[in-house]
Length: 161
Image 1 (cartoon, one colour):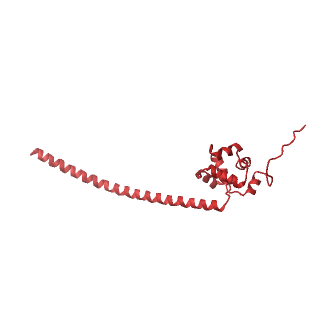
Image 2 (cartoon, rainbow, N blue to C red):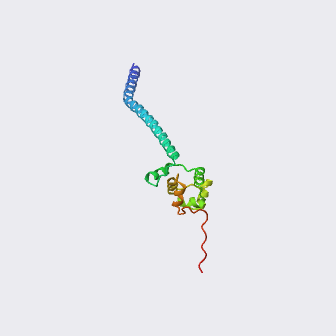
């Protein structure tokens, strides 16, 4: 009889403890479910905003708008990906030599070739300059590098005697 009472007490204690644990966990489960749904909603909203930003960026690219170097351009350069093919296409659009393009973005001719071949990538500061000069008109680009309407090689000065 003693074992029967012990077994009954054990079963009753187990049942009551499970009931208490279930009641305590119920609030936590509700909060967890609410947090998961909030996180999912925020992810959907972030995705929609990212798509909107990409759409606006494409519209600006199509409009061929040159953006000066500002704090916003600096932040934009961090987010942009560098494409050697697009960079080469930009140089071709300007009808610039590698030397001229290097002068425009502040690097050497060899660096321009390395970027276009995919052997190197611009660092953050260089990328800011590339982004700022993207879409610039050829005339403005020539003025920026100080060549004006002059094209081709500059003549060498004769050595002073």
